[in-house]
Length: 516
Image (tube, rainbow, N blue to C red; front, top):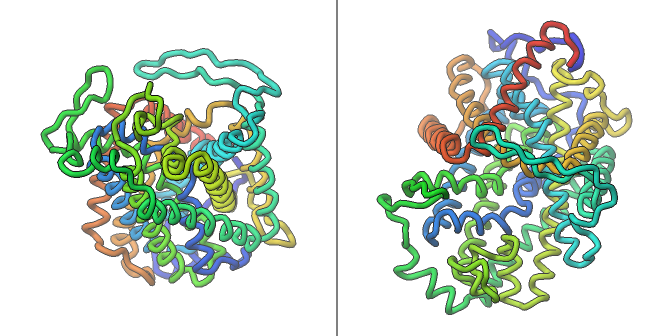
């Protein structure tokens, strides 16, 4: 990919370090603290919080462990954000996490992150959230459906590779993924017209969806409590199956411990809380980044995690955790078997009837639209930074002459995202990459330790809270989750690991002069 330009070797002196990590001068500083915080929150809040608690509750079989899964996610997310704050203040450069990995562990690791981010993490997430907009729009216009095909190319047959079953997806254009494509194209074009324009949209939609989550919590406290749900979920029953010695069936008769099942449950909750790091991608456009980047990470993740935990208590107050897939009412289906796992919609319907479900569908569409905008705005900055280093197509480093935005990067990201929308594989790829996402978080926080040792003289306007204890605990906990997923969720982990490793020969072929 790209040109013969090579990133400079890792700095060996304070002066070299300052030169290598200077702020981007050609980008417009258009993001203040409010916009940066809104970007953190807007990128985190998608459709996951309204859906994944159903799957988590089926895995943990306990109200206490459902809350526990979200508390673990909250701890990891906030510690990760506080650790990234130090790196962001040290290196306020476009590209964020890519830059941190490049500087601490070397250009190969930065490339592998950017490669995986472009191939599926960022673009796959944008595609999936866009399709979620279409899914909920279909509640109001039934013609918008995954089965209403405009062009149906083929259905990929299922096949097995070891413990994994791949394939089975439909490839083509239907009305549901057409909505996703229109959302992606519209937001990508809008973001060309200046970072302030993209930030304005982000601020509006983030305010709307944070208000919707806050409204769900407040209405749930005031009006949503159901006597049957309270009796089933709280009191002595709250702690059902939550002892450290309890065994949990994760399918196929495999029994695991409570700590292991909590690690498995992180698949849904961690992804729902992911993308908080996206603000670091836009660091070159943040005003006073030494202050605003760490502060926006702390504020944004803290507010969202508090809302997520509050929402789960509302779910438990409105619906029983346990239920039946064949139940005819919301209370009989419970959280575990809410229709299509739409727990948020089920809770609002339980509170206010069909109008409540419709209002929640609108809130989720607003949430998805805002999330797509944040991901599109942020992701393009990584490929721009990679192209500047000669690790991506050279034209991706070009800025719009008038608006000083990475216009080519936005268009390249848009095209690949649209391909994922029609491929039918984006949801599957997202599942497969969970393991790899956590690996890069571990590596980046490990890089914090490396930089403390190799560049003790570097300016650190902000230092990670709780260093070295909290970052070390993060690494240990995240490694445990990855090992558990590797063992018990091979269908998620091995393909993701393969995608990452495939980047290694691509990187070295590029180093040898091949234009890949």
